[in-house]
Length: 160
Image (spheres, rainbow, N blue to C red):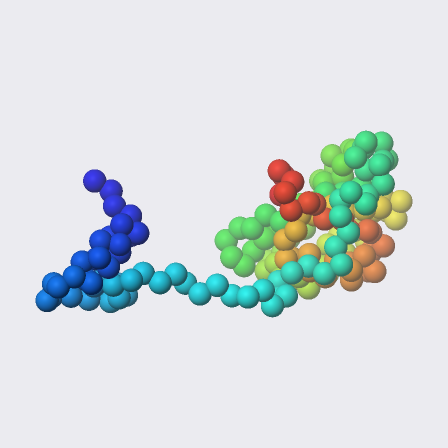
């Protein structure tokens, strides 16, 4: 038989309120008869991306894959703190891999991706589409450094 923690706590809480002299709740992990949920934090704005441009604002040529120079990026994490950024050009499927040996914080990702995009001719770095992960928190600085517009997917898109 498999039991979940919820029915156990419910049973003990009902029993704990009865006239049982030995408190069964003291044997539980928390020592309380009633299970209390963990506190939820109020959103304070940390970890949120600011001034994102939606994928719907991209030129139509990006979705049609008729022009070279529009990239898709993603982060692949390995054994911490190492990670790799994959940059895939949408029309030609040309792939660039960017090593992140020191971690994948936003500033490190921005510097390494900007350096990688600098190796590509300017006509071939028109836009970059990314998911809504925090490693792209410095996307405005990346746009200023590389001249590549950064777009973000919808929260409900299936490939996110």
